[in-house]
Structures are given as C-alpha cells and as structure tokens.
Amino acid sequence: MWEYTDKVKDHFLNPRNVGAMENPDAVGETGSLSCGDALKLFLKINKNDRITDASFMTFGCASAVASSSALTEMVKGITLDDALKITNDDIADYLDGLPKAKMHCSVMGQDALRKAINNYRGIQIMEKPGNVVCECFGVTDIEIINAVKANHLESAEDVTGYLKAGGGCGNCLERIEEIVEAAKAEA
Amino acid sequence: MKNQGRNGMNIVYTDNNATTRVAPEVLEEMLPYLSEYYGNPSSMHSFGGNVGRKITEARAKVADLINADPDEIIFTSCGTESDNAAIHAALEANPEKRHIVTSNVEHPAVKNTLERLAKKGYTVTFVPVDTKGRLDIDLLYKSMSENTALVTLMWANNETGVIFPIKEIAKKANERGILLHTDAVQAAGKIPIDVKDSGVDMLSLSGHKIHAPKGVGVLYVKKGLKFTSFMTGGHQEKGRRGGTENTASIIGLGRACELAKDHLGEMDKRVRQMRDYLERQLLEKIPSSSINGGIKDRLPNTLSIGFDAVEGESILLLMDQAGICASSGSACTSGSLDPSHVLMAMKVPFESAHGTIRFSLSIYNTMEEMDHIGTVLPQVIKRLRDMSPFWKNKD
Picture 1: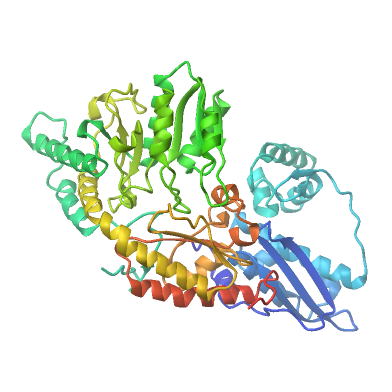
Picture 2: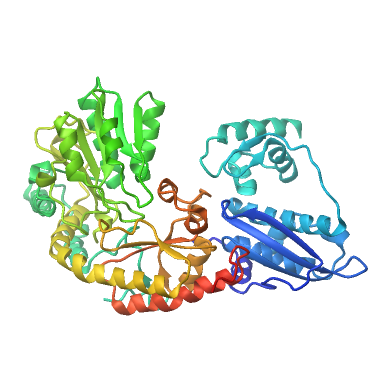
C-alpha cells in the first residue's frame, strides 16, 4: 500500500508551500478533474528572472501532492532558464524515486512549470497536435513518441505510468505498444 | 473485540468487503486440522476418515446458511474459482447456446471471465444500471433469448452494497430455460440467502468475506443440474472439483457459516445502525458529500460516499495515519487510473467519483469507532480541500 519512499511520504504528510499565492507573477495549470489529478503552480519572479517564491494547489494522490511540493522547493531561488531545465526525472529523483505507475505525477510538475514560465514570458507554444491515441486522457501519438524517447520507455505499461495513456478503458494499449516499438526502433 | 495492530496502535477496520478477520471461534475449530489431524479425508484409514467426517459436518453447516442440501455444496479455492466454475459449467451444459447476460457492475471474477469468452466468440450482454446502481430490469429481460445459456449477476455489489432482485430475475430466467448464477460473495452473511426460495441454479460464496480464512470458497449447484467440473482431477467433491480438500479451511468455513447465520439479526440491526450513524455524521459534517447507491435495497454494512474535489488515495493514506482502514472507489490505488467501473457505470460525476471512499463494517465494529471516523474524516477532507485547485472555498 505505502509503496512510497520516506521523502514522498514526508512531502505528502507535510507538504511545503501549499496554497494559492496573492498576486503571483506566473501561474501554470495542468491536469483536470476527470483525469484524477491536477496541479496549479504559482510563482513570484523578480526583475532578474529569478524565482523568489513558489506555491501550489494540487488535486490528486499522495505522489501528486509530493511531486508538487518537491517542485516548489526545487524552483525557489533559481532563474527561469535553470527552472526550464528541470525534468520530470529530476522531480522524481528529488523524492528518491516514484513508483513507475506514478511517474505521471512528476510529468505533471514539469508540465505546470513550463506552462507557468511560458505564460510569464508571453510565449505561446504551438506544436503539431498529433493524433489522439488515448481517448480517456486525450494523449496523442506525438506525446507518446516524445515520452518514449526522453525517458527510454520500454512498454505500453511504462507509457501509462508516465502519461496515463492507456490507463482508462485500455482500448488503445495495443496501438500504444506499436508506437513504443516504432519509437524505440527510431531512437 | 478490539482490532489490535501489530504496532500496538488500535486499528479501526472498516474494510470488510475486502476481507474480514478470521473469527476466533473459527480459528479454534481449524487449529487441530493444521497440526495433529493431518489425514487425507479420502483415505481408507480412520485417521483420515475422521477428517472426512468433519468436512461432512462443515458441508452441512454451509448448506444450512443458504438453505441448500449438503450434496449441493462444492468446496473451491475462492469466490473467483466458484464464478469461473459456474460460468464454465453453464456453457458446457448448453453447448448450442452462445450468449451470456450479465450487468456492467460485476466483480472482475465475472467481468474479466466474460470478456475473455467474448473474445473467444461468445456474445455477452452487459446490462446497464441507473445512477443509483439499480439494474435495468426491462433491458435485462429483453436481452434474454433462445440463444442465452446463462444469466450471471451479483447478489449485492461489493462497492456500493446495492442489492439486485435475484429472486425475481431467477424466476424469469427459469421460465425461459436459462440458467441463473449469482455471485453472492458480498451478500452472504450480511442478508438472508435462501437458494430454494430464490430459485437460483448456481451461487458463489467466499470464505474470507465471512470471517473464515482466505483460500476457500463454495459453489452451490442445484440438484439435477448437469455440472461439468472446471478443475479436473480426483474424485473429490463427487468428481465436481478435483484436488485434495483444504481441510482446515473448509472446517473453519463450516463454523464461520454457523456464526454468520447466528449473526444475521445483528447485521440487520446493530451493524445497520452503525452504518446509518456513520453515514449521517459524514453527510452532516462534510459539505459536498454524496452517497453512491444510497437506496433501501443495500447491504446493511456498506457505505460508499464521495467527497467532491479530493482524491481517494490521499484520503485513504491520511486516514491510515489515524489507524482507519477503508477502500477508495477511485482506482489510482489499484493500477488503473479511472474511477472504478462500478461508479462509472452509475454515471457518478468525476468530481465525487475520484474522491469516493467505501466503508464496510462487520459485527466487530463499535459505535466508538464510528465516532473516531466521524472526527478524523472531516479534518482529512478539509485538509485536502484546502490544497485542491477544484475546491472553491465552498465551506
């Protein structure tokens, strides 16, 4: 049941920097109610592009709360450029690891952070949308290919752990497996 | 009796639909058959034969709980095996029929077995339930056809406790020459079950849901039904289930069934009162909470309650800190990421489905424990809502 590291437990039971921020300079939101987890990240940024404060609100499981808490600790005091270098693996490492099936919680952290910084900078990211493979969680083939390459994922199960894709009805699992195989061959 | 945790902390165990403690009386009955009386009940010598006699006694006690004849009781390894065996037997008995009717809220033991059969070429109709978890009886009857070999439906739902009208359905199925199997794993020991009165053809039970140990189950098969064994092997269980008997557990199950029958009144009164008291407290103290399947025809021990804008695993782990054991209705805890298929079938909104907790009581619970939950849970929900981006400070 508690298959979490002590760090995850600690950040879940004693989350750092919880709550909405008054007059944040940047906000990044990711996830949704239907997905089962969501994160709203708030940042204070000074004129030197340095993050001076961070807080979060999270709906989700223990590892989602812990990943959010860890993220806020990690970004405080660093520059936006350095913050953009933080990957989901860094968040998981900060917590001494996350169960494979919960890696999507760290992905959520990375995603919210990028959204917050891009919003602050006024950058709009337009990406080739790709084709939705997982209807339950709205995950596209391009997202899957990127995740497989970035994280050296081996199987559809790994993809579910990282992106949730395939974790709902499961109808797309065979298609995900094909995409994983193709992406591995390319990588 | 207090549930003492290993660490000395008092555990409030309200997860009895998942599994139950072995009753002390059951354990006592079993112990000699795990030590000095190790004979094989099939042996010719009296050392084994004495064990065989105890199994005969246990069979009679199990039969008595559901008003069956002892000959109609087959011991299996678990409820899941019983379900598999029943479905297998029904299809073998009707090789020309290729259609099965069930509901869309069944336990995985039935659901996944039927999904596999569908892949093998059988047609399976999953009849929907309404938002209260009640079966659409009209659609169920319309789904039965000449080609239907089996209707298999749970007697009561494990997540919500909602009870299906099995007697009424069995009558309709029998009229049309269709076999009726019911998974009564959650119903047994909580409400009266009478196989003769209800007219079911096959019925599954599980030992560990009624204070017997894990690893023993029962399949009731109505006398005269053509039954082909699922597990082939020796002559045990009159050739209907091969494999040397799980003697100690079967003997324990016999005692557990005896106790369960004695406790049915307490289930209906004291346990129901505790459940209703807990339900009332939580609804009063926690805003934006709602009961899933909160209807009259519901098991007296089960409470499925959803809390908006918070997530089940977090609730469970914070309750765990206070020594409270329960289950969640969202499946983040069980590998899958969607809320349970039962809550989805009932069209429970995502907002409360992800934050659904199931409490399932037993006769070993106390009002004091309900008060403990009633004190802890409002704090847990508030704490999680305070950090939830979806909680708009409603309180």
